[in-house]
Image 1 (cartoon, rainbow, N blue to C red):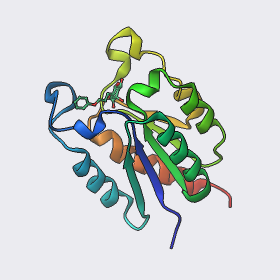
Image 2 (cartoon, helix red, strand yellow):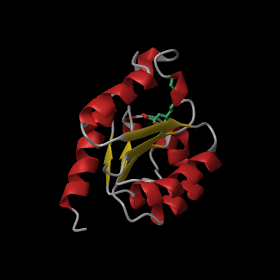
Image 3 (cartoon, rainbow, N blue to C red):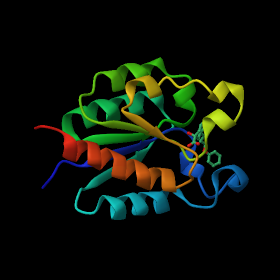
Image 4 (cartoon, rainbow, N blue to C red):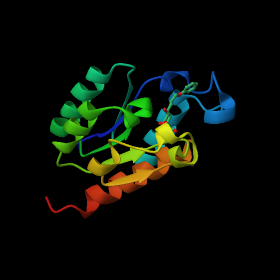
Length: 147
Ligand code: CA2
């Protein structure tokens, strides 16, 4: 079986579909997981969410050992976390940063990302569709790689 695609989600994304639907929509994280699995087709997907920065660091390190590629929506840690930046920088698999909203169209404190400089690409602003396009992007980078 092929190596899985890891999809990691940061703080508060477990609330998707239940709070602030005017900002983040009505789709739940479980529905986004199902859409990612369908989009990834034969590639298995490991889909996780944590509110804890260190747990996300552990999972990024795990992805470096186990995954073919990583998609990460670091949520608020996008704008604060040197720890996530440092962990992502150690990876030699494709990394796609993914956001539901467009942080650049929001408050100034969301305009800086510690993740973008250590990602291969970033997809944002398309709601749950951002995740599906991130799956396409990650798997196309995997297919393009020389083993
Ligand atoms: O647009 C995104 O995906 C974000 O990563 C979402 C983060 C935000 O801090 C980033 O700037 C952009 C926030 C996730 C919080 O999710 C909630 C979901 C439902 C209700 C409340 C928060």
